[in-house]
Length: 184
Image (cartoon, rainbow, N blue to C red; front, side, top):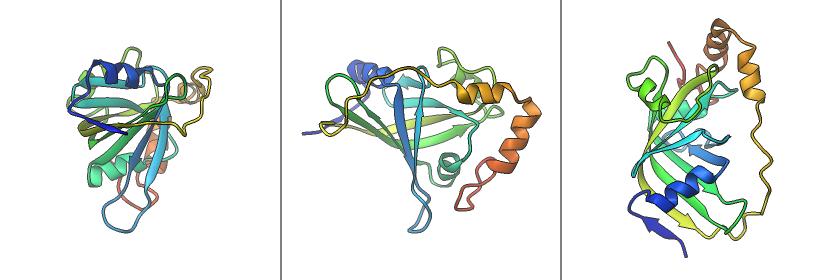
């Protein structure tokens, strides 16, 4: 039977930070539009800021659905699964905020991460969590963690700041549903 938690306590914090991958779900308002689920990961990509706030590093990528949805309605769910050890799933439901490098508080959020990238970071997503729950995870397969991929970091390192800005301007300006995402 699943459990609902009042806050992110020490055990939950340890569990969340131990998982090398998590999933982010968002959706636009109303009955139309696409629900988006994105895998995120890499050790050190997620930070627990306090008992009701988490944040994760958002790298330049092919889409900007999460950013567009958060700007429209703020709704977000993060889900982690134990692929090793005892079975467990934890979901964090809440309201998200997009902090881009020009945003107030961006530098403070980045300091919450042990080794943020020098290049290619497009935003930090901060989530104020209003519901924390777990479930058994009995159906989640056991898988071995081999390590983080460095392909996105290497791709970004080959780009100049202007190249990355142009990429974001042309490929991350709106969601697949036409919602504004990264706009000037």
